[in-house]
Each structure stands twice: as C-alpha cells, then as structure tokens.
Image (cartoon, rainbow, N blue to C red; front, side, top):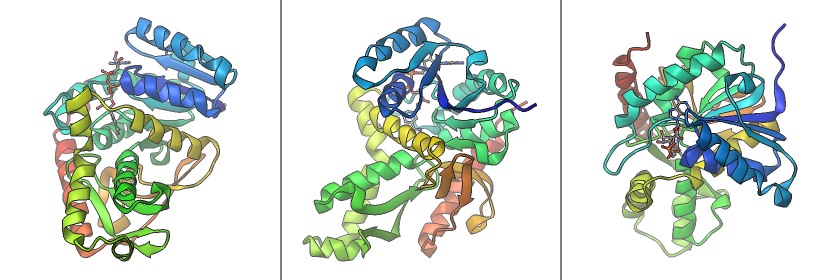
Length: 318
Ligand SMILES: NC(=O)c1ccc[n+]([C@@H]2O[C@H](COP(=O)([O-])OP(=O)(O)OC[C@H]3O[C@@H](n4cnc5c(N)ncnc54)[C@H](O)[C@@H]3O)[C@@H](O)[C@H]2O)c1
C-alpha cells in the first residue's frame, strides 16, 4: 500500500542560512505541527531545532527535531536547501557541480523511501537542481518543484511598489525563466491593480519608461549579488517565498506562482525546467498557465531555456 502523506508535517534538508530561516518562518506560520530538520552536520540541525523550538510559547505547539531520512518519508513537503551558496562574484550556475554531487547523496535517499509528498528544491542553481531532482527521484513531474522566480517576482513587486509609492501586493507583475542571469521581467502584462504599468507610472509622475524598466529589471536581477556582497548570503526573502509555496500546497490554495517546473509544450518549451506561472495546490503543479508574452519576452525566454539546457546536457547523472 502506498505511504500516506502527513499534511501537517514538513521536512527541511540543509539547515544553513536558508534552511534555518525557512524553518523559523514555517514555525511561525502555523501551517505544520511537525518539522524535521536534516543536515550532514547533525549538531547544526540539533542546534537550529532547539533554538527555533524556544520560540514556540509565542507561536504555538509543534514538534521540531533533528532527524534523518526515515523521518522525512511521510512529510507533505520536503524542502531541499542543502548545498554550497554563492560566494561574492560567483553566479548561481557556478555552483552546479558541487551541488549536483550533494543532490546525488540526498534525492535517492528520499525517493527510495516511497515518498508520496512534494519535493521543493531551493538550492542553487535551482532550475538545474529541480531538473536533476526530477531525474534522480523518478517522482512525477507535478511533485518536483523549484522555488524558481517566486523570490525574484517578490523583489520585482517590492522595487516597483517603492518606485510607484504603492503597496507591492497591488503590483501584478512577474519574473520568469531562469532564477539567475537570464531571467525575464514580463513588462508586457505588468499592471497595478488592473491599470497597465506605464499608465500607472504616468499617474505617479514617471515618464521615462524605457530607462526605468531597464533599471528596475537590473536591480531585481542583481539583488542577490548586492546582498551577498554586503552580508555574504540571502535568506529572509527566500524563506518567505518558500513559506508562500508551502501555504499554496498544504492549504490547496491554487495561486498562480512562477515556480520552476518541467516544461513540455507551453510557448514551445520542451524538456527544460524553469519558472513559468503555474497553479500550485495539494498535488504540486496542477496547471501550467500559458500567460501571454510579447515577441521580445518570448525570444528571451527561449534564450534562457537554451542556456539551462546547455548546462543540463553537460551533467553526468549516472
Ligand atoms: N532559490 C533561491 O531563491 C535561493 C535563495 C538563497 C539561497 N539559495 C541557495 O540555497 C542553498 C543554501 O544556501 P545557504 O546560504 O543556506 O548555505 P549554507 O552554507 O549556510 O547552508 C548549507 C547547508 O547545507 C548542508 N549540507 C551540505 N551538504 C549536505 C548534505 N549532503 N545533506 C544535508 N545537508 C547538507 C550544510 O551542512 C549547511 O548546513 C545554496 O545553494 C544557495 O545558493 C537559493
């Protein structure tokens, strides 16, 4: 009989900056009653579990502990944040070989325990590692997701919101493609509460659209480099992004999120994992949304896909 999913349980593999910030955000969310932390550095996992558990009297009861792969097998979501992070000057793609090696030691451990839940990849390069996790796990495509450009989209909304003096939750715009240097800001459909973004800019006294669009997209793309140069790692924004994806799954909310997911058809993309908008619910990817793009955006999306395919083709997953 297939293993049952425990919808109130989450597991985090890798308890560094990103894993521990994610655990902290999830502890406060009330989404789960059990959280297992796994790390090759067992003491690190134990220390994080204890520290985070001490916040429980201010949040709510929950079982938080350091564990191993037997403990993660029935979790609704296993979040993988294990692996090297970017050093100043490194791109996300520079991490690929180190982190593929780490994934070879993690993903088969999960898969061979007949894991019935959703595998959520956060480690970078997230699109490549989501594709690698899909191949190594043999899990169905809908159940292997990457955090993708959910974070970049949050950065986009934040920066646009600041530029326009408006709540970023009223900014409807997204970043798609690679979570990395070839990502694409989708301006053609961007709007503020239903008002096309350029019209809203003019209402707020901004008329230099081309210049502003270029600057804002560059700021979004370079956010991680700037934060890493200043504080060595990024983790709060990604922790909130992961919490949002977890909410979508365990509450079966079905929001449209730009997560990394396997493509076979939408906009002519095939056999590549990158961020495209998808309805996310209890089964993971429930529907791939063919959101409209301008000709230029479509061309750049294909360039992004080609760059990722090239990296995938060079990997040895044997
Ligand atoms: N997707 C995103 O938007 C996003 C954002 C920020 C960071 N990241 C990525 O998240 C990853 C983690 O970043 P970080 O800053 O937390 O790094 P970190 O070095 O602080 O933590 C990595 C942790 O992984 C553990 N680890 C290494 N190998 C392991 C294994 N085989 N099994 C279990 N645990 C293992 C380490 O012991 C360490 O605790 C990096 O790849 C980083 O680039 C992704």
